[in-house]
Image (cartoon, rainbow, N blue to C red):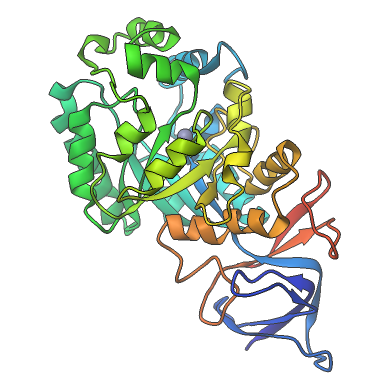
Length: 395
Ligand SMILES: [Zn+2]
């Protein structure tokens, strides 16, 4: 049996917003029809605005137990990595699982329907198997020495297979960051991805990163030496742009999520977009504020045709895994970005980045996007204020 929801405004991502619109949803959460009919009576009224379910395009669920354990803005990127390295072996399985279960539930309640989740281990498998959220797992590989590239790659592939064996088939390889991978490892991952699977990399996150990549010096070098990483084996990046150097090595037309972009310039965006990979520009502003207190220049992303997506990163570098809190911070940083564009970043664009654009991201017949109610907004001139929040209406 269908349920009809009527809202003051419905943003469908499938045509203009509908004032006093009605959405018909079946028992499986699939949209049956979307229409406007003032005479229609048999509906549940949903105050304010309805949008499709939210997509968190970049998360690390397996780091959820690190909530409040990493000091914010402690010696920038290098200080952050130092703290992560020193904490990484201090967790037990049950503690990790409990923390992940709690965050999975919180994301669900906020209205998040899909997550692009970075995994370095199998610890999240049970939580993902039982979750009502759709996870795309990015098995992350790293290793700055070319000599270790094949074994790092093989380990990544075997972890991918572990997810597949547990019926978590939305899984692919991803690269950690330009400062932690060799060219050889990038090539192996690129060949493996072919034309069918999404991938990602953390990039242009800080000055520390660019300094290390170009000249193998600075605070990151000191941290890597402290933990005995093979700094001498790392090949400097000679290209003027670390981002372009990376993107030009991707020779397939797959979705590729560039995460952070704190240092990304308009010229990099323009050049990279002319290359083969289908690039998604992921913003994780609350994590940037947490780690370095530097954020991307949001005026670079005002062009509506850019594929911008929203990520939360992890609880090692954020106070919550909330897509809505990210949008709030973005709105505080730049109030020129239209409400509808922000909703697009947080819904359909993320769906496309995770190759889910035929299932979620639109309130359209045949889709099962989840329905999310936005509260405490002015329906006549919507904007994301500090008091606004979201609530899930339909799973
Ligand atoms: Zn991350």
